[in-house]
Length: 544
Image (cartoon, rainbow, N blue to C red; front, side, top):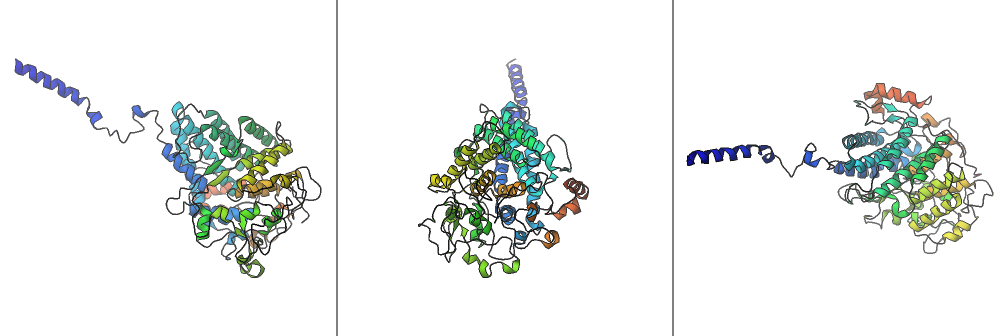
């Protein structure tokens, strides 16, 4: 009898153990998204973190140099790479090898963000990850859209094997819808990424909301000329929703400084011998404006008598003591020759790149600064796109913040000065006497300087949107597209309009590419074809 009882007990224990076989085969160190115990855990944080860094830095030195340095910086005329003539993009010539990687990368980022959105939708515990994925999806796509124009914009609402090309107008419509939804979805009471995962805002949901609204304001002003009614609606909604109110809330991404190509990238260019030099366009904007004498602490043999004090920090005198700009768009035969020798042109300052021979480990990548928000609000108010904003106050607030960023002094005297730069623009908001000195020209000039050097894409976008700030026409432009183009600083068609779509698209994605080209209008896939929001408006009144 005892034997039967013992046998029954052993069978019972064994059956109980069998019910736990699944538990025995579960690795608790590698949780699965399908495991109900982790239903509220956000498995997408690591993926989102990676895309945040990639989108903020062009995914490192390779794409950053090819797209930012060798296209955007040259088109904005903040710099010229004047050491050699190999940089053909300064002349508006195409170089698919420098753009195809970015073209593909942006779509990869958007597709990965779509997956994060689809996996998290409807789960309150993942609301913030979904919201930030929506915001970042708009940020990375808008950067590329303002470069190429019509392009694929993969959807998270549809299952697309080959995402179609989308018009710029429809992309912008989706940008505003997504930013509005994301700002409303963000919830400070819900858990989010930690400071290491979110290198931009350290997990601060309120700052993400201000970034969403500030980005919405930036994109709203982009439509000032093509859709002023939409511009007004979206700009007012952005401001009412809450934009950045101080420099502590602005969007920056620190370099990881780990592995090749992950330093602050202007530092790497200098290490490669590819130095960045001031252009004559930039020199003309900063000479004499503000009426302040050249600071005695900056030694130079050739220099203007008066200069914007930020400019001497932005650019150092050349090795031979020259603080002069190089003509933009030189013919390859004239680069680094004669009066355009690199040794006689002001060079990107140590404040940006760090001391000679050292890595700049501390400078972050600027993405959307408080100063830009001030100037966006100033323009919106000055042009009656919004109410409840004092244009002059925002303008002066932006200048003061920019002076503080660059360690410049005497901002009160600068803002009171009616002395004008070569373009005819003074710093005083109330002084509108003379050509080149409208309120809009002041605002855009200061916005351009404040966004130096990381946000040069905004300088180029304003040039296309408003033909501001005043720039020199490049000395030599691609004759296949610009042979009959004007050479007039007041004619917007004197300047490049967009970057062409990589040729591989026409060969490997012919049907969708051709549909995309049709959306571009009569100009087709050319550097002279306007992006939708660019209507060849001219607000430049400069006489020089």
